[in-house]
Image (cartoon, rainbow, N blue to C red; front, side, top):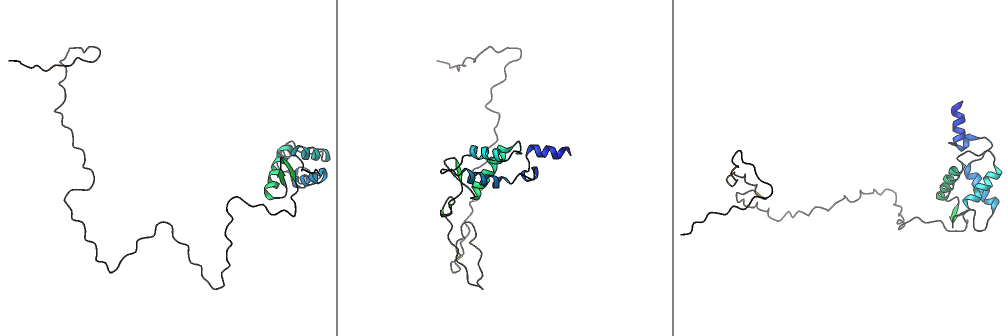
Length: 182
């Protein structure tokens, strides 16, 4: 009992809210016909007309109206020009989608089997059956690619400092090699 009242006040399903309230697309078309404006009717004027004719609208009326206007516009039931909605002209050509239109398909005569489309990717090179087989390249004994790094040996490391001597701050002075002059 309580859940039915909540769903009615939230406006979840307009067809279940009230038996006297018609569907939104029907109310929208009635409002556009009744207003009969030359340039079309705005969303606010459609909403005001529906408010004045139907008193038991749900709380989410504006959201439902916006949703149904967009839905009807996409289905082609109404046309939007300069933020105004109007009925489409019956003599107007049908609206084309974006992009290049698809090529018309030619109907095949009966009894013809359609082959599968071409496989994706680059086709393989044709094999020449008369050509002699290629000889394998002669191996030089070395493997392909970059040779692996050699392990480092510890010969070029500095001797450890004598125990008990503290190092000073900063970079140590450069040690000059002792050169004997004779």
